[in-house]
Image (cartoon, rainbow, N blue to C red; front, side):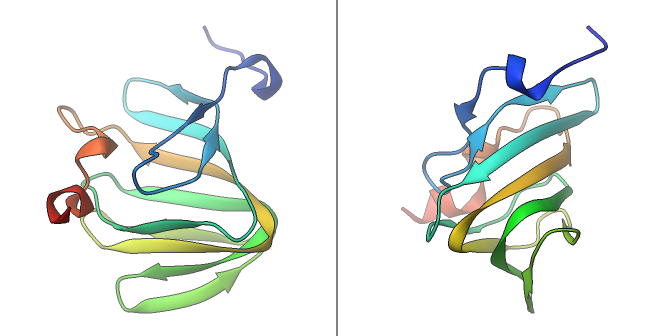
Length: 119
């Protein structure tokens, strides 16, 4: 299938062990793209994965920590998470909606992110 509408795709809780992100995503051969929503005052715990990832803010604001860098982003801004660099998100009061883009790493599921080994 080549054409999609976000509203026609089924959403899911993406990685419930570390994040409140919910929404639909589409996987190609090399890239995954999702429309994710985070409820107000929630978070994505610090984690790392071999995928590189971009998150483009459509609505709301959040504080990102990527490695040693920290910044609050809002609509029109985006963040790059390099492979294997710890990162986290603190969603601010109004909630957050992002386009999430990451490469697909063969044999890796986000469910195997580093933070799971610490539990």
